[in-house]
Amino acid sequence: MAVRAVLRLPEAVLSRVAQPVGVVGSEERALAADLVDTMRASPACVGLAAPQIGVARRAFVVDVTGHRKARSCHGTVVLFDPEILVAEGVETAREGCMSVPDLTGDVARPTRLVVRGLTADGGERVLDVDAFEARAVLHEIDHLDGKVFLDRVAGPSAVFRRRVYR
Amino acid sequence: MRHFTLTAVGADRPGIVAGVTGPLVGLECNLEDTSMTILRGRFAMVMVLAGPDRLEAKAIEAAVSPAAEELDLAVWVHAIDESVPQSVEGDTWAVSVHGADRPGIVHRVTAVLGGAGVNICDLSTRVIGPEDRPVYAMLLEVVIPPDTDSDELRRRLEALAEELGVACSMHPSGADVL
Image (cartoon, rainbow over the protein chains, first blue to last red):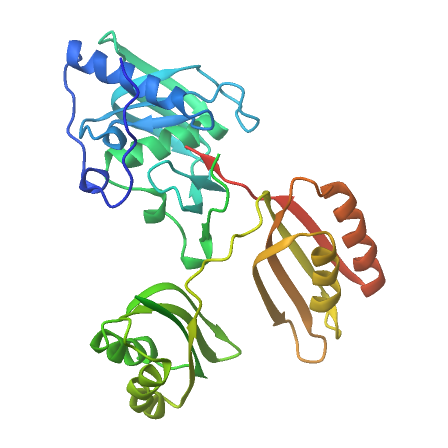
């Protein structure tokens, strides 16, 4: 239960494919708590993946509660070993990332997802998410595959220097 | 460490970037922020370089000149101040202006923005459409300071657009941190 440092590029763990968790135990529950605490420590942050706090395991948290672009909202969601079952639609929007604090980029992503994973209790959970919550989930799953938004933009004209970081 | 700007423009062809940057590696220069694009068939590059203290702009120009001659490029190099000017803080907006081409669109629009304290971070213009009926498209990324009323700015831009016979729109383009 701790707020951990959020790693930034070029930390190698951000560019590696993270390892599956398989079974959720006490170590994984502690990781989940750290992800939630670290996300909440930054008011503008709506999601965080384990590699961002230096852990190369397939786990993330998202929480889009109160976000103006959110439609579906499942509150604070921690998932291990997430698997995308359905992805449909496409929409482009600008994303920022705590691990790439100086830049933002326009990224096209599906607008609706069905995603399955393990919860902190070890049970299976299937989520149907859309709009901003879907974007947040996909951004975090990208981190588990060693990708950041820079790996998704259409080209140099879709990347911008961030001027204000809140 | 000293910083320089290098600007080069010439007819587009393969090999320009490699040709210009090769001699810079030899001078132990690092490329920092760069922007390169094609403007009406001309490849245009602007780069900020960091080089060793002893390096002079003239030496960079001399080192690049064989490549510049071979590629038919105009090249300019200048030493720049080490201070980094602070950019205006505020919300990021996208502004687009498009319509029949006529003189003065960029000047009139940017004069309204500048007058409102709005900082332009990125601007590109394109002349598109048929030659006998050219369409001008201007896209800007701007930062609107907190004490500037964006609704008032929108009204002023819309009034100007009407006067110029073009269309103008603006929308917030800030990023969400995921």
